[in-house]
Image (tube, rainbow, N blue to C red; front, side, top):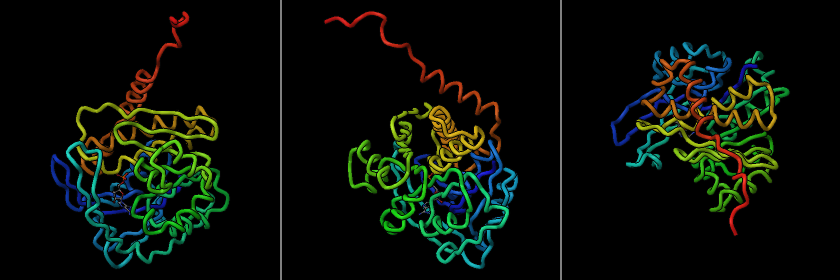
Length: 309
Ligand code: AMP
């Protein structure tokens, strides 16, 4: 029940009101692996350049990731830089340098082609499709994307939508993709183009799971200190996919629990810069947080009397 992920393995330069990190380990596949590896083994597909630090590889190795699909190429690694506003809810991308990703053609190792659980992390939709085409009979495919690709590769992204079971995206991306400001209509618009399940993430305000006939809402974990929101979405996806793969089920109850695991893993990501919080994260801390979610979400059924008229 390992999970195959393709996505960016990157060097991020991030500015927040609390500080700045330069060329820190980042990327969608990196954060996804950091989170999902607490649940199951992760098979990573991606590419890094000659400038990629040994420490980045060592981190992925320390999470027991299978790096047979991580190619090393001459050239520069993917680089992204962004700056966050004071409330940390919005960010501006300052620069995106695709580097070795710009002409990367993935050749999925034979051992990865039987993957049942596939996560197409945020990267060029052409590459996401290319990877998907090499997987024989996936049981569940989820994808992520970003405004960069919604604007630059819309047709490829729409083609991808027809091939996935779930898409995860944040509220502004859902609005941009659908052209509708209303998130509930936006989710329906997206579902009509393929994915049965749409997860719309709303940063600190939680996430909404749209299934074919129900809607589920998980809150964000009420953290008192948020340091760097980068990677929250990918860590969310790692928790969600890890939980689903571990349960081996796509029942509504399992999907809902997976969204809560996603929200928990996303909340750890933002407590430190880069992937630092995952370096010493303990399983007991994850379990404690899941129980706190449960406590936050329980409430009594309606009043046992009729409401006054
Ligand atoms: P998140 O905060 O979860 O949306 O993900 C942030 C991560 O996505 C950063 O570590 C970046 O390296 C990576 N990233 C940013 N822009 C892109 C892009 N256009 N394609 C792929 N990865 C990206």
